[in-house]
Length: 126
Image (cartoon, rainbow, N blue to C red; front, side, top):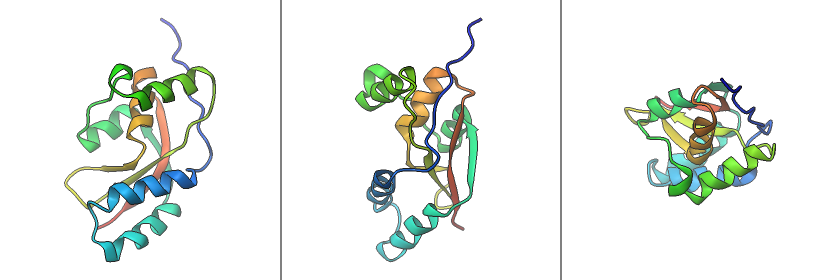
């Protein structure tokens, strides 16, 4: 059996990840709480979780390369040993985990190895 490919991760999410999270979360969180949530995500505790567990907690299927240009791009980055951004996760605002930013990265990691550890920041809102 082949050893799964190692995935390189950046130490911190990029500025564009927080902008993407803001755009997505603007449909889930009241405007008066949105900026506070984004700022809290910036300093939320870091962790890492198996790609399959993130998808399961979010109730989402892994996207495939042929169905998503962004997943294809992330898989190419992984193949070329180019690090990708950690994910931004939000819990407690729905009955399931919200991937505020990084669904395509989690899907790409899953496609490489469903047990791949995906680093990110997890914010609990209750």
